[in-house]
Image (cartoon, rainbow, N blue to C red; front, side, top):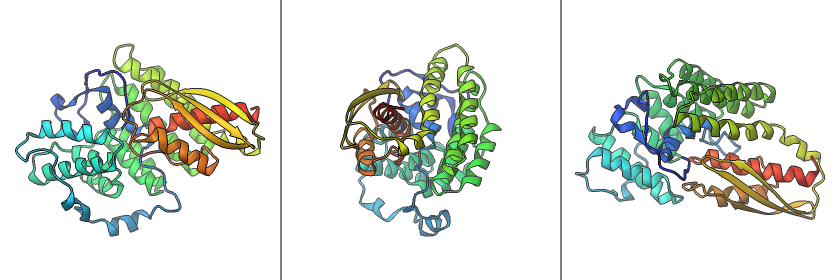
Amino acid sequence: MESTDGIVKLQSARPHSCLEPRYMRLSLAVFGLLLGLVLLLPAAPATAGTPSLDQALAELKVPPPWLDAVPLDVAPSTPWNKAWDRIEELLMTANPADRRKAVKLAYAYQSAGTARDGLPAATYFLAGETAWALVEHRKLTNKNAVAWMRLASCYLHFGEHVQALGALDEALKHLPDPPWRSYQEAQVHEARGDVLADQGARDLAKAAYQKATRFYEAVPRQPPVQLAGSRAATRLASKVELLDRDALKSARLRDGTFTASVFGYSDSIRATVTVRNARIADVQLDHREKADLGARTIIPERIIGKQSVEVDGVTGATVTSQAIKGAVFQALKQSGGL
């Protein structure tokens, strides 16, 4: 889920997750939730502490044990579209308790059969319930490109690269009609680059990112898709540069304060990095991203703690997370004389 400054109503040419078009008149903030989110395959890639997919599925309990203790955030009689509005609001905060409230709402309406097909699965995904989201996305019929990309993200979270790439192949078969076709095709290639980068195939990842850039640059020159494509192409350039982050490992960092900016989801993110005794001592951010789920605090802390930009992003705020890492990387390049 990504932040945005302006509120622009969108009408998807192809409903997300089998939704009726009238439910797809989304603000850019919600577009960040359901579409822009998949740009970086937001469920963080597998780390040493991540269980295998088989283990996660074996341990999955639906509903999770904690759900009973979570209050229902709206009256049970509330129509689904109003409940979904509240789910969006809850998902766009940095409070984990709000994410659980969103999950509670989605599950309650899904169980009652009144939720729109695909949106509970999207909610579990955005709330970080990755194994549950994976199961629900597998169940969806007539998945569109966005749903296939979310499924790919879930597979990547568990280190299932082959299945992630397979899901992205399916995404290419289910692209929407213009004007969003080129944009979503670019997203698929960018997502492919993310999987390849996680595999360590950086040359292939760079080729996929470059292909994505060409598609972003080819989006129709009409709002709002033109704005989304232009922003994505600008942001993707930073991701390509991050593929060369190994150069920092051999660089000697000079003490001082260094500043760099990278475009995030809706605006530039400026990072001011202080290097002391050749170590990252402080990272300060200046940006206007809104619902970043705490990424502005979490990512700098992780970078300082690991002394590296190779840290996990924040699930649901991956565009912002990536931009923060990119800006810090650019500042560190200045320190290292690169």
